[in-house]
Length: 64
Image 1 (cartoon, helix red, strand yellow):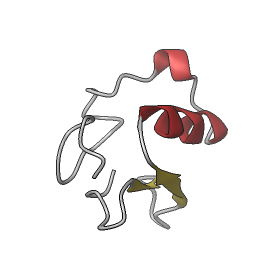
Image 2 (cartoon, helix red, strand yellow):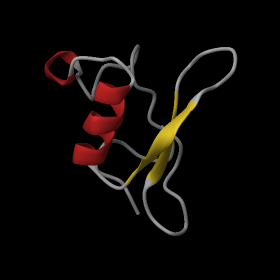
Image 3 (cartoon, rainbow, N blue to C red):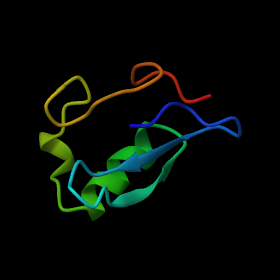
C-alpha cells in the first residue's frame, strides 16, 4: 500500500519483481475488491498482516 495520494486514496501494487499495479483504492471496500480480483480470498485477508500488506504513510484507517 502506497502512501495516500494528494487527491485521496492509495495505489495498490503487488510485491513481485515487476511490481504489478493492481489499482487505486479509496477505502477498505475498494482494497478488498482489488485483492479479490488479484486472486485472494477476502475472508482470509487480514489488514494487519505485515507479511501480506505493507502500509506506507499510515495504517488501514488513513486514506486521505
